[in-house]
Each structure stands twice: as structure tokens, then as C-alpha cells.
Image 1 (cartoon, one colour):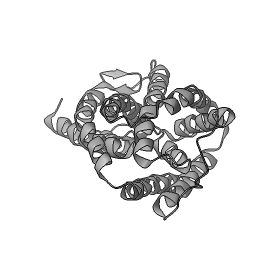
Image 2 (image 1 turned 180 degrees about the vertical axis):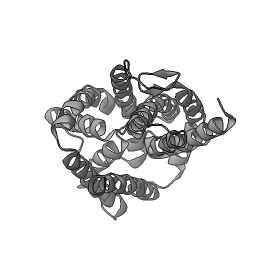
Image 3 (image 1 turned 90 degrees about the horizontal axis):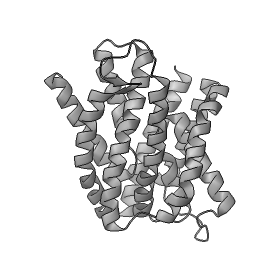
Image 4 (image 1 turned 135 degrees about the vertical axis):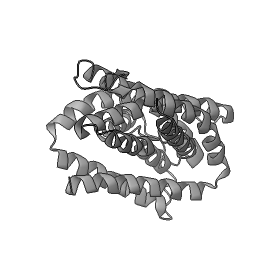
Length: 268
């Protein structure tokens, strides 16, 4: 592996790990564009590059989320009852996302996701407080919320933080707990997504050497190593930042992701 690629993976991993630990997202917003740039520089077919970038990003999020979970457990910030209740439905939604995405026109799918994230981001930025009586949903509500999270996350190719955190905050969950719970729920989303991409790319032609399906192992090893090391710094930062400031930072990140999705929808 060339030294420049090692440095590229290291910088990507450090940035993604700090963002993941601080904001409770998987870091895909950093990893996917970074890998697309690297693959384009290597002259890779764009249709193959996007699959490799998304699949490799999801696989690194597995490692990122494990590191973040270990750090958040020490602080007691994870709402385990939410994790236990939402995980089965998140997995169901992630499983259904492939079928739903194949039935919807690409424009409609991207526009829906972009508009939803725009709404969520604006709510995080403005001085908005949820109804103080609103609580986390019960049985039917949990099934709907969890399935929705898995469905949208799977269709958008994200680890779920951009969807999970606004839903939890709207239910009066403190920001630090929402961040910790979100990165914990990223683990089943990323695991299911990675398995799907490995299976889908198992017999694909034209894959680079050292690929496992659509997962590019050198990038996985390089990025995951540095995300695992840098995530605890992000977790520590998330517990030091005031909740309103953390909400605004997260809101800006969500709006950037939404703008990117809407741009691709209207200007493919």
C-alpha cells in the first residue's frame, strides 16, 4: 500500500472518528466522499466506486460504533431500553429498504430523504423545544419509529444518526443521551448493510484486489484503525459541549447532508 494512501486513510479515520463520537453519527458523511475522491484519482469506474465507498464506509462504522459504545458505557449515557426495543424494527426497516428503494424512482427517493433531513436540521438549529409532555413512543409507536429509521437509513446509505437523534430529541431525550443511543443503534444498521453489500458484490467482476464483495479491505483496515482510536476523544468532547451548541452543530451537519442529497436529486 502506498504511503499517500495510508495517510489518506489515517486522516479520514481521525476526522470520522471525532465526528462520530461527538455527534453520534457513523462518520459516513466523511468516509464516503473521501473514498470517492481516492477511487476517482485511481481511475475507477464511478458506478463501481460508489458501491465500494458506501459498503466500505458501512463496514468501518461497525468498528466506529463499537469504540463509541465502549466509551459511552463508561459514562452511562446509553438508553439501553431504547436500543433493545428499536433494534428489531430497525433491522426490519433496513431489510425492507432495498425493496422499497427499487420500487421508487430515484428522484422521488432522494427528494423525500432530502426534505425530511432539511426539516430535521432546521428544527435542531432554531430555538425549538419539544412538547414537554411528549415521551418516547410505546409499542406501536416504537415499531413505526424503528422501522422508519431502518427504512430511511437503508435507502439513504447512512448509519441512522441523522434520523435517530432528531426523533429522540423530539421526545425530550437529552442531547447527550440521544448521541450515545444513536451511535449504539448504528451498529445493527451498519452490520446489516455490510452483510448485504458483501453478498451483493460476491460474484461481481472488476473489483480491485483485496475486496470482500464491495468492501475494500485496505481502506477498511486503515480507516477503522484510526476511527477506533479517535472516537473516545469525540465522546469526551460531546459531554463537554453545552447541549444547545451540540444541537446546532448537529443541525448544520444534517443540513449539509440534506443539501448534498437534494443537489444530486435535482442535478444528477
